[in-house]
Image 1 (cartoon, rainbow, N blue to C red):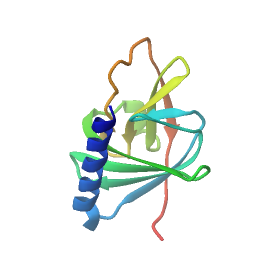
Image 2 (image 1 turned 90 degrees about the horizontal axis):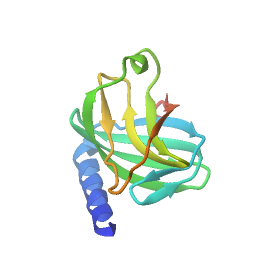
Image 3 (image 1 turned 45 degrees about the vertical axis):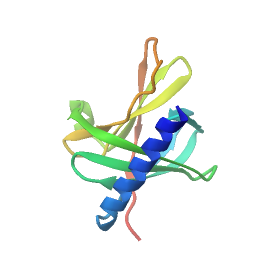
Image 4 (image 1 turned 180 degrees about the horizontal axis):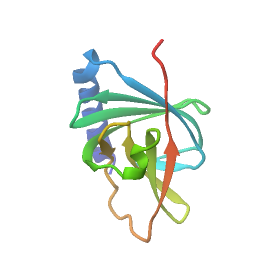
Length: 139
C-alpha cells in the first residue's frame, strides 16, 4: 500500500511539473467531515485545493488551513457530471460508508468531473456527501 501511495505522489509531482507553466486553479472549502485521501485521514476544517493539469488528468494538492497538513493526489477525468451540479458551484464529492468517508470526485465547473481512485477492500452501502467549492482569486 505504501509503495502504491509513493507511486501516486511521484505521478502527482510529475504532473505538477509538466503543468507548471499553466496557471493553477485554487479553490477553498469548509469540509465538515474527516475523510480519507489515499492512505491518509484528513481532518474536518477549512481547505485550499490547488489544481494543476489538463483536460484529461490533473494533480491536486489539498491543504488544511487549520492543521497545516498537505496531501497530494492525481485524478483522471470521468464521464458527464450530474446535471444538478451544473446549475451550481464547483463541488467535492465524498463517498461515505458508516462514518468513513473517501474523497471520490471534484467538479471544477466544466462539463466533466475528475475521479480519484478508490482504495482496495472498500465495501458496504455507500452514501454521497457533496461540499461546495469557492474559487479563490490569484494574488
